[in-house]
Length: 134
View 1 (cartoon, rainbow, N blue to C red):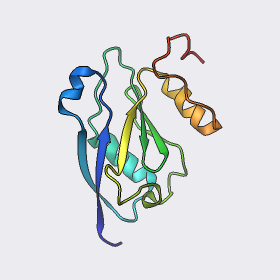
View 2 (tube, helix red, strand yellow):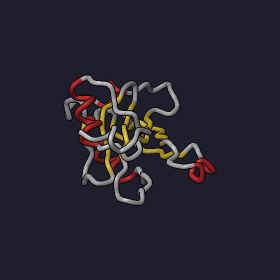
View 3 (cartoon, helix red, strand yellow):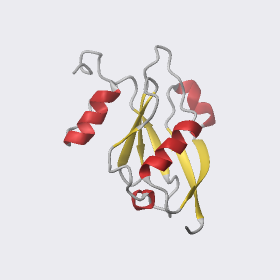
């Protein structure tokens, strides 16, 4: 099984008031043989991502590259790689932070997820609501 990995996770600020205590940092420990789905599920319960008025917020979790989409309106994250993939292959253990949640505003998380899966450019996170429609 090996030694557990101690990981530093940062998240983007959601507004100017949120910048006051940035970087928003979380430390977690995971088994070195943890899968992507195991780490995503663990972060789902620990990340404490801000809740946005209106109930819609989209977050992209990335290490070396994006590997999961989280949404305020979803009960669990959706991974962009094989769920059983070894998590350690997705992070640079010499970097800080090891993981980062990028805030993708109120863009439809289904659309963000589909763009990643289809290799398309992500929608503008600051675009008008008509830009974010399917």
